[in-house]
Image (cartoon, rainbow, N blue to C red; front, top):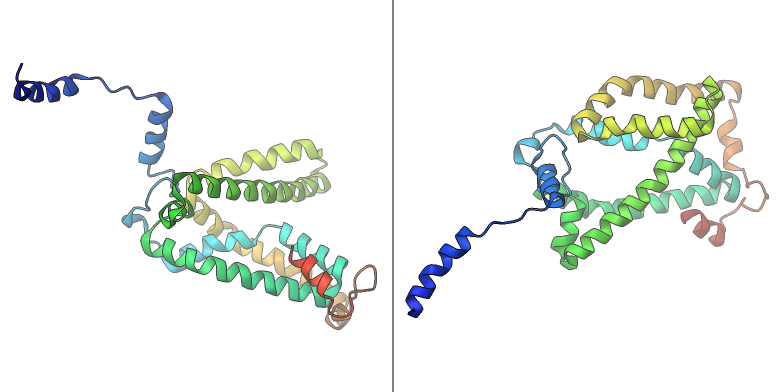
Length: 241
């Protein structure tokens, strides 16, 4: 057989080969192809999906500020380190988060990619993007556990549901809400946002009505040990962590 005959028969043999697609790859491809899942860590955001108004996106993103653990963390910092140290620690942490998130948000919005693809394209490669996703997942699990504990405690106070069942209810009710991404979450936010804002403002109205001078007293609060009346670098650093 001449080299020409061998080269001409090679494509035929390769064309006749059967490609084996394992179930994991098939499931992955089906997830990526499903536009209803809206998981943009796996792919670029379709351009036709980038037609949401700024108000709709902001309304959905505003839901990130609605979890009750924020109030619990702020109150813990106030009690542990006093008002002055807690205030500056919160402001400094917020500034760091803003500066770190600004370029990520800009490039994600400009090119329609999620943090996973940004990390991969920044030179960390596939393994680096996987580690980034793992860090985000761990962070999410921690906050989800804290928030579930708060909601389970509320269910116990309101309906007498044991905490174990409360954890299960809080975990299961979230799955159908987040499965289909920003579309479903945005719709839920539109329905529940007015009620949430009303219930958020109501305690402040009650507190200010019962204690008109609470703001002046709060600024002088030195914490439970009485040592946080002035700025303390150690307390400030501990509050930032």
